[in-house]
Image (cartoon, rainbow, N blue to C red; front, side, top):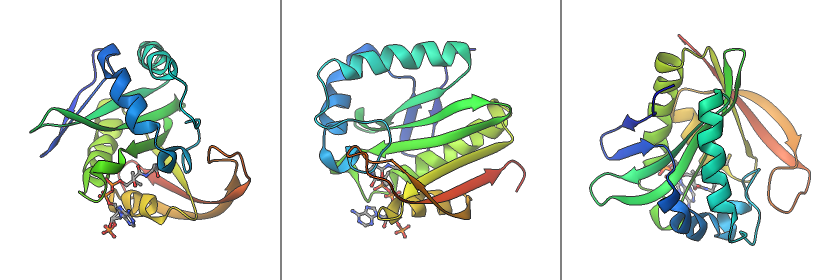
Length: 176
Ligand SMILES: CC(C)(COP(=O)(O)OP(=O)(O)OC[C@H]1O[C@@H](n2cnc3c(N)ncnc32)[C@H](O)[C@@H]1OP(=O)(O)O)[C@@H](O)C(=O)NCCC(=O)NCCS
């Protein structure tokens, strides 16, 4: 597959590059990110960002994930990350984080809408699913504004502390 890249009004979503590692570590190293995401440990190990970036390239090449770094186009600053994970059988899981200094600017919502279009139009996926901890409702707003449907409540060991907690489940089907 070719390199993946998405442009929105204010953002550029592009594949992670080795030079992103320090900023990924700084932003994803904030406990407020690790606390509510499924695969970010806290404290954030120094070598993890580099390993993650290498894995992203492999996963894109094998067609199993499309990971993006989110860049604020006007400043060139790295503001977060968004991904289609576990791609297979026409489906994928959506995941994301925005660095705390960039919260509440509408970036996650803008990026998620564009990611959904990319998933259905470029990758021809048919169904996306996502979940967030019940105590993290702002993530639900992102999904709602990207056209996801609320499916119900489940339980997952999502946050970095590994506790079983209630999670809200969502899906979006192509063409809806
Ligand atoms: C969830 C997250 C991605 C939202 O990013 P964002 O760029 O701030 O989101 P947006 O600006 O698009 O806003 C989305 C909604 O969240 C709300 N929101 C944003 N920051 C908030 C905050 N600190 N407290 C409460 N609500 C907040 C916004 O008001 C908006 O809701 P609205 O449309 O009803 O006004 C970001 O907070 C984050 O990365 N959190 C930690 C990681 C995470 O939760 N990842 C998802 C795991 S499922």
